[in-house]
Length: 356
Picture 1: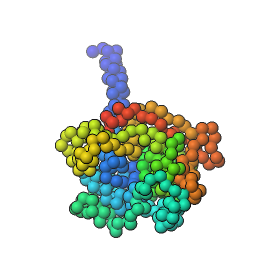
Picture 2: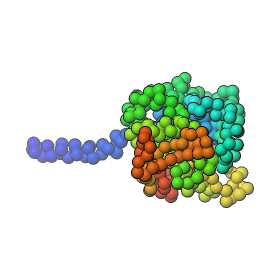
Picture 3: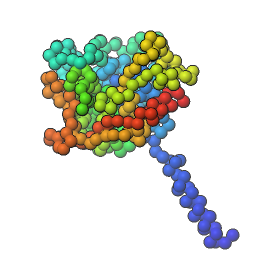
């Protein structure tokens, strides 16, 4: 073989390797899920989607109070990770109360003073369980086979972000208390975070907990304000403006429960009686929209960049999301606000990840 021909073959081989390399070595999206976990919809399904997506490196789940107390959220997370056979995913328990002192103790007085739109106030309506083990036993009628890590969720966030600079997406689908405290303790992690994606807020639509406020931002407005005003490299907010457009229904239920899997059986147990009683029953899926656009950003069909803020004045507008198209008050940052997604692709992504 001539030297020239040999060089051509070597060059061709190198080119083929370079062309193939991206599909072989494509980096996974590294995610920390910060959540006030419930069973299945909606936090639990978001967890399942992330855990079952091969292109997602789920670095851990940090638990905050909101829908549920931290102990409940930890128990529900552990149970669903066991169901998914993902004991490798660390679970770190976080902050129990919102930043405003005595908010839990004064919540009924607050509701009388400021009004309400919904009777739902999450964990504020119940006393905290004695431990995550007690909460696990109450929900799953057994003892957990995995347990939370020893690190506090705030410490876990700080250490994991520092260990993976510019690579971590924090998916905050509960109140922002854990993340707010983390960036106050260690502000040096702010530029090290790749992106923060929130499920929270209501910008051009009314709130769902009060006429002014969406639940996650209402639960801890001070924490949401701290986070939205932090100069993260990228912030995407998934508010009620987009979440209230898409509803889980019997057609989606039937698709998820068609195979005989542990996920299908859990869905049948929780939602089967609802659909048997009322086939027209629907429900919103909030956090799963946020998880979906982290998994596949091409789902996004409409978003706007605005300066954003949260009203933390203790009054009728407590927890209201604020946005400014031109220039916000001093200290506000620009964020992307999601307004619509490709609905068919969204449901296909969800059902595929829950049935494969």
